[in-house]
Length: 504
Image (cartoon, rainbow, N blue to C red; front, top):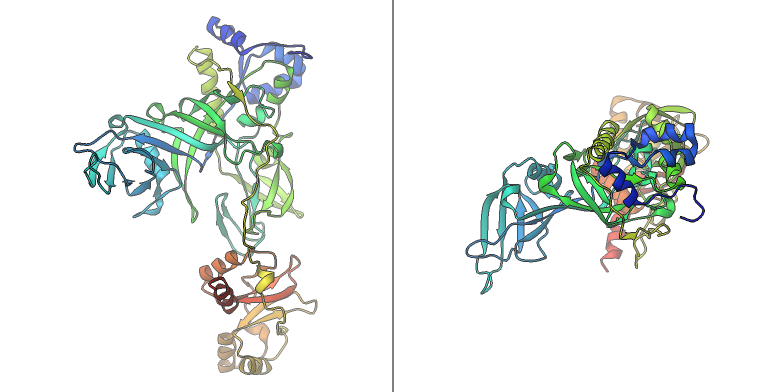
C-alpha cells in the first residue's frame, strides 16, 4: 500500500501459514513487541495478531430448521423448553433469541439457556401450534429433539463484540439491577465489560482487515462476520459486528446461558478475530495497551439515554480492581472473563500455527463513520419536572410533633419532606409516623423521620419513577437536584392525572 514501509497481503500471510513460517502472537504479546521494536519493526516480524473476548452478548440467537412432520405443519407459534421462538418465516424455521424468557421459569431460564443446551447435545422439548391449511393440515405438534435431529442450527448474532463498553456505577441511594449487573448505592461499586487490549475491534479500529466475510473464532468453532452489527457506532469507538456460525460445531465452554439478577437472560459468547498485520498502521493498532484504551464511567442511577458521565477511565484502571470517584476509592468488578478471553486468543493462535485456521480477505469493509441514532419519537416523553408539585410544605428536624400533626390534619398530607437550613432533604415523615409519634409521646420530628429516602430527580422520565413507587410500595417521592436540595414532590396522584391525560 502506498505510503507504508511494510506491505503484506492476506494471501501472502496464508502462504506463510501453510509453510509453517507465520509468526502469530496474541494481542497482549503484541503490546510488548510494538513497545520494543516500534510499529515498523513489529509489522516486519509479526504476521497475525489474535484477539479474544468472552462476555454477555444479549443480541444473540440461533436459526433452527426442524424438518417437516407427517402430516406437515406450518408453525404459527413454537416453544423450546417453554421459551417462545420467532416463527414468522417459513413453515418449520424458527429463531430463538437469547433474551427471551421461559413462560414457566422466568429469569431462571431463557433462550440463551436453550442455545447452550442444544450445544451440549441435550434434549429439547418442542411444542408448536398452527392454524392449518390444505397443504399443511396439522395444527399441533409436540416432540423431543437434539441438535443432531435438526437440519440446521446456526448461531446468528445481530450485535456482538462491542469495541468498548461504558463502565457503570450508581449515584442513587438504593441498589439497582441493570444489564451491567447489580450496582450498589452511592457509587458503591463499578462494573465493566470487555477485554481491553485483547478486544477484537480495538485491535483494528479502522477496519483495515475486519469486514464482511472475515473468518473468526465463534463459540469454539469457525464463524464469520456477515455485516456490521446493530448500533454500530465506530465514530464513538463503539463498533459492533454481526456474526454467524454452525451451532452444531460449537463448544459449551464458549457458549453459556446466564441470568443477570433481576434483569433477564443473556448469552455469554466466546469470540476472537485474527488480525493480519498487513502494514505498520495495523501493527500500531494491534499494539494498543490497556493504559491507552479509555471508556466513560457512567452513572446508571439516572435512567435516561444520555446518562451523566462522571469521568474517563482506562482499562488498566478497571482491571486493577479499583477506581476513584469524587475522591473515594471504589471497587471494580468485570462482567466478562479475561481468563476466557486469553484462552480464546491463545486457542486461535494455536489453530493458525497448526494450519487448522486460515485468514479470509473481507469482500467489503465496515463503516468507519456511521453514527448511531436514537429512536425517533413523535410524542413527548414526560419528565418529573413536567408533572411534579413544586410548592411543597416542609418541616425541619427540630420542629415539634404537635405542630406537624396539625399540618397533616389541615392539609390531608401523606408525606412531609424534612429539610435542613439550606433546603437540603434530610428525611421524610408520613402521616403514619406522626400518628405513632403522638401515641408514644415523641416530641420532635428528628425522633421519627426516615433519613433513608427514596427520591427522584427533575430530569428523570416519569416511567422510571413510577416503577420506583411500585417497587418500594410507596405513594410519593421528594424531587431533588444533584446537590440534594428539595425541588418538589411527585405522588401517585400526579401520575394518575398524567395517565388520565394520556387516555384522552
